[in-house]
Structures are given as C-alpha cells and as structure tokens.
Length: 100
Image 1 (cartoon, one colour):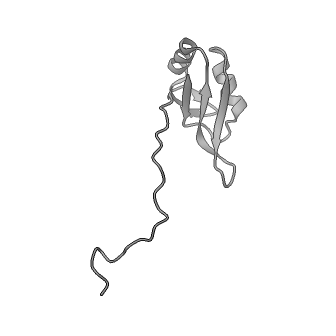
Image 2 (image 1 turned 180 degrees about the horizontal axis):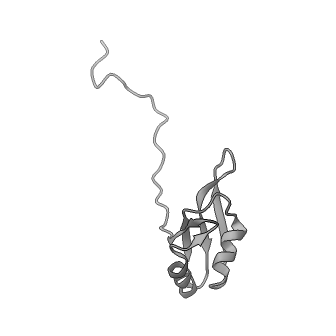
Image 3 (image 1 turned 60 degrees about the horizontal axis):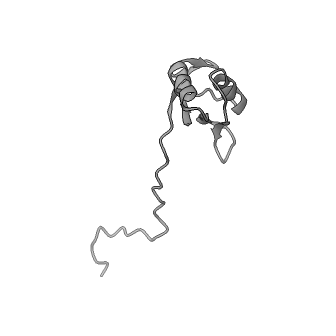
C-alpha cells in the first residue's frame, strides 16, 4: 500500500519517515519529496508497505502524531490522475474580437 505523509518537518529525511513506519511492519520504500530546483523538502512524502493490514495500522497510529515537532497527516495515497499539461499555444488576448 502506498501511504501519503503530509505536514512533515523540513528536517525530515527518507530515513526519518522509514524509521517511524518500520515499527508497524516492513517498509518497501520511504521518500520525502524535494523541490527540484533547490533540493529542499516540500513537506510531504510517501511510504510503501507491502502488507495492507500493517499499513492500515500505521496510518491509524501515526495520523496526527508528532514527528520532529510537526503533527503528521497520514493517509492512503490516492492514485495520480494524469491531468496532462496544457499550454504551448499562443494566448489570444483579443477577448474574442477580431483584430481588424
């Protein structure tokens, strides 16, 4: 199960969140999401746990708990929806009116 971990301290690392979840069972991966430009934490991350029952227990136990001075928000991660990127075209600022 993929778990979303929000409201993380900017000091939290992959190891920090892995250790928090390992007390509930096996952790396949733990990752704090970082800004691609400056490398600083964005304040959230994801943890993967293979056993659904252990993951549910971790979610119930850790949601609202403090880690490094901040109260975490922990829940099952929603699958990404591919919203696609728009743009690349020229913007028309004429308000729909003909230029001529």
